[in-house]
Image 1 (spheres, rainbow, N blue to C red):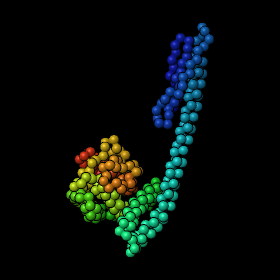
Image 2: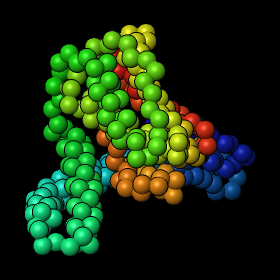
Image 3: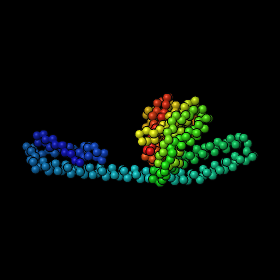
Image 4: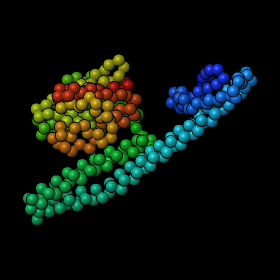
Amino acid sequence: MIDIDLELALASYTLRVAARLDSGVTAVMGILAIRPAPQRIFDLAERELIETFAVLIGAILEREHLLAAVKHAEVIEASERLRRALLQSVSHELKTPLTLMQGELETALRDDVCTPAQREMFASQIDEIQRLAKIVNGLALLAKADAGQVTLAREPVRLDELVRESFADAQILAQPATVKVELTACDEVTVRGDRHRLRQLLLNLTENAIKYNQPQGDVTIALSRNNGTAELVISNTGPGIAPEKVARVFDRFFRGDPSHNSAGDGCGLGLSIAQWIVHAHGGSITIMSEQGALTRVTVRLPI
């Protein structure tokens, strides 16, 4: 869209040439000012010719801007394709050596000639390999999801049964951290989805609630039916998330303030994967956090 703004003052003729950008905002692209010879004023035909000339200039400028925007979008898309391909390649290439390293260390750990110090070292190395393997598997999943290569099952799933199973697992996970886990509500709810991915969602959220908590802290889990949706709420009494960081909690590798996590073994992919699983099931996930008091994750899935 080309806008012409005329300003006639005595014998001068000024036009403001503006074009509508791809963002929908009209911006000034330039100023066209013409002054005739002394004692001469433009007649109507000359004014129309000048206006036509200004419109053509604006159209050319607008076209150049659109071409630049298209090229920019193509560069972004190419970069995104390269990023996905790199993630898939790296995660694939790392799986085999990590599996081999873990196997060799487990074999060495079973050797009777190992000293207690060596056993402790091997066990520590196995823990680190398992942590790296978890990161690699998370990256592989997200890369495939970005590329549309993950197929989810669509079958009836008793979500309340999964919640009870996750609650039992969470109680075991919470024991070393002296965190109390409670199941305050568990309505019978059936959703259509992928049982394996929904279980992964629950594990990620409960594990986070326990890990990012305080000693003697609390975790509450509640599942209810609410206006045609299954509503899952998981709360914890951890240190909370700063208001300026709440919007970033679903970003990959975002870990908030690592100093608040005594375990220190988070990789920042759990909530990204949780968000993908929820969205893939047509649901929503939100986080509310009050620093030093309470953090609440709410998941809503269609029934």
